[in-house]
Amino acid sequence: MNLNTNAEITWCPGCGNFGILIAIKNAINELIGEGIKKENMVIASGIGCHAKIVDYVNVNSFYSIHGRVPPTLTGMKLANKKLVAIGFAGDGDMYDEGISHLIHAAKRNTDITMIIHDNRVFALTTGQFTATSPKGFKGKSTPKGSIENPINPIKLMLAAGATFVARGYAGKPDHLKELIKKAVRHKGFSFVEVLQPCVTFNNTYQEYNRKVYDLNAEGHDTSSFELAMKKANEWKEKIPIGVFYETQKQVFEENY
Ligand code: SF4
Image (cartoon, rainbow, N blue to C red; front, side, top):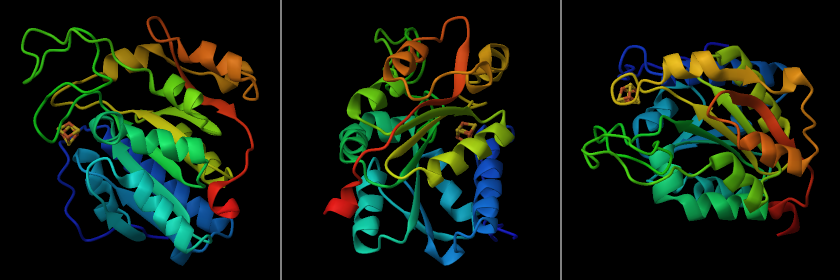
C-alpha cells in the first residue's frame, strides 16, 4: 500500500529521520498485511524535527504538543480500545519537556508504542543540548561544553516499569522495522529508542556504524530484567540494539 502523502519532506538531506520514515512505512504495511485495519491505526507526534513524520505517512494522525504524545495516545486508547496507537517523539521532546508523561505511561502500562527519535540535540531550535547529549557537548546553549552527564533512556524505562524496551538505529531501517512490528504486537507499553543522527547539529553516523551490534543475534535473554539493565550500561565500546526486555503485565485501559 502506498503510504506516501503530498507533503514536501523538509528534513535535511541525510537526516536519520529518513531511516525511521522508511521503517515505519514498511512496518505499517506489513502489519496491515497481517490483518490490522488501516482505519484502526493512529500516529501522533510532539514538537521537533521528528514531528513532521505524521505529515509524511498516510494514516490517521495527530500533531500533538511538546512532550505530550503519551497522554494524547492514552486518551485515544481510553476512548477506543481497538486503536493501534503509535507515538513519535524526540529526545528533547520526551526526555526533557515530557519526561514525566513518558514515565507515567510506562508505569500504567497503557497499550501504546512510543518511538523516540534520539538525535541527542534540540535540532529544530538549531542546536541546544538535551537530556541525552553527551557530557562536553558544544551547542548554542553550552558553547563551552555541557557539564552534565546524559540520562540512560533504556534504564529509565526499565525502572519505570515498561513492559517492552528496545533500541533501534536509523541507519538500519530493516532491523528497526522488525522492532516496530514487535513493539506494536506487544500488549502493553512499548518503548523503542532510536539512535538518530542529526547531520546538521550532531552527526553520529560514524560512531554508530562502528559500535552498533544486534544483541538479540547474540542470544540475549529478553525475559531477564537484570540482564537488560546490565546490557543498557554498554555504550563506550559497543552499543547494543534490539529488544532488551519484554514481559506481560495488566494493561491500563483494560482495567480502567
Ligand atoms: Fe534532521 Fe538535524 Fe536536519 Fe532536524 S536539523 S532535519 S534532525 S538533520
